[in-house]
Amino acid sequence: MARHSTMDLRQIEYFVRVAELGSFTRASIALNIAQPALSRQIRLLEVELRQPLLIRNGRGVTLTDAGQRLMEHGRGILYQVERTREEMSMLRGGLTGRIAIGLPPSLSKSMAVPLVRAFKKIMPEATLAVSEALSTAMVDALVAGRLDIALLYNPTPSPDIDLSPLGEQELFLVTSAALTTDLTTGDPITLVRLADTPLITPSPHNAIRRFIESELANIKRRPNIVLEIDSISAILDLVADGAGSAVLSRNAVRSLGDPHCFTIHPIIEPDLRIKLFLATSARRPATQMQRTMMNLIETEVTQHFVGTL
Image 1: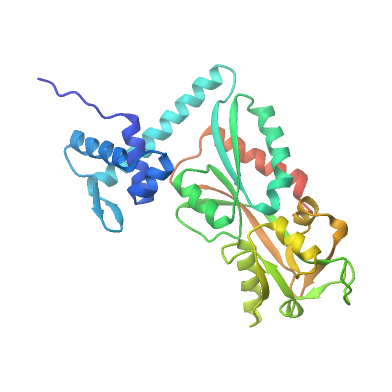
Image 2: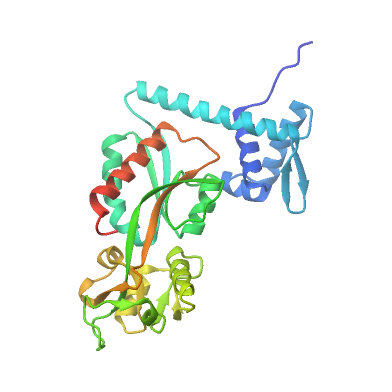
């Protein structure tokens, strides 16, 4: 009697996600499925293929030789399925589906509206999800498949993500306009003097925070951090109230605070310019819908943020 195959796309998707994340726990969260149900589907897949695919241990899972081979084929299968869906949707009149992008807090408010408008104009039948997060969290979300595209500041190179440079963003010292200092708006401040300035910064996971610390370390100095808070809007409120100063982009001040409440000072010797990158997962080829969205992001950044980044 012929043996009927019961392997399905859902099982392949589950397996690929567990293998990519190296953990049933993390995969169950990413897939929004109970861990026992996920484990059962993977076990059924192993029974169907008559060999183990994953080696389970206390730290997570690793791939067997068969698992590695299935991972290579599985990614290709899932990509081809997505391409087929896109081509079928284009025959009906346009791209459909869902795409998720991540933006850093300093850009999310100013970029969200033009991006959504451009997206709806080109892909009116599709759905866009926009998240605001720090770079570290967005990298994790890209790897886990919760984000398709992210904008990252000075990301650490990784085999898990593909990076494309978009431009540079100049950083400024932002102080309260209500406080009397020896600096007026536009007066530059040297990096050496910046080291002595009481700063309100995000937590160490923030890319701009890490960049400031790295630049000061180059001159054998450390930042004088008086408060840590992971909200650019809250940081600006505290700066306006006189609790300290901040190092931010001019765009962050314009979009998240009242510019009249602040004085902005260029940082010199050297200038502080942080690089902005477009990031995607290196584990999954970009679909047509994702490539279209990437082009939209590049266009919006060039048209609306060059010179203000």
